[in-house]
Length: 113
Length: 112
Image 1 (cartoon, each protein chain N blue to C red):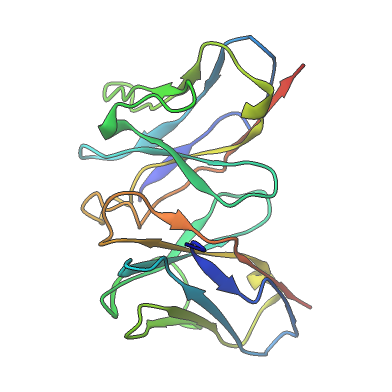
Image 2 (image 1 turned 45 degrees about the horizontal axis):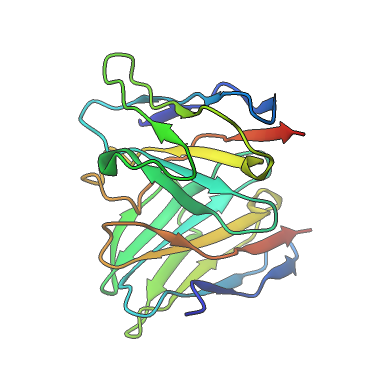
């Protein structure tokens, strides 16, 4: 079965410091991977998808097939980045469709002033 | 556009009862998915519907069922509620199941 590992439940950094949220997955094919974010009192929303290769709110994520990782990075964290972050590859039987997502347990990022 | 709307927002039920949760997708979206999020965990996939047909089911017992209506809204039904069914139930819609999935605010179900 598809597995997603986000090893850090909590991550705390200071404003302006670099931040990296780790994600490892198990998938036999070539997955499309997503990062979702949930800010306080807001609904879960898509942050970025690796296939688009976009940088959203300064965040980037590179798919490393050799290490089966999709770590989320930002060079200079801001206080407004404080949120819960979920790594989410699609279910391996979904043909890559993004509505059958396998979410990790999430990492709560706190950016201190 | 109001986005994905779910009702009710909160619900308290007794063990053994039945519950129906409702979801209205974004206008024009034909695909609806349901997720269960237990406290401290990421969302777990329950069902996906597209054009009123079930396209996928997660690892949940038969007590869980769902359907999608001609207007693409959806219901999630849970029978014989257990304490362990207490969770936040999320609905997500997308145009055809490709592209971004948009989530609702969720329904918080508490089983006592």
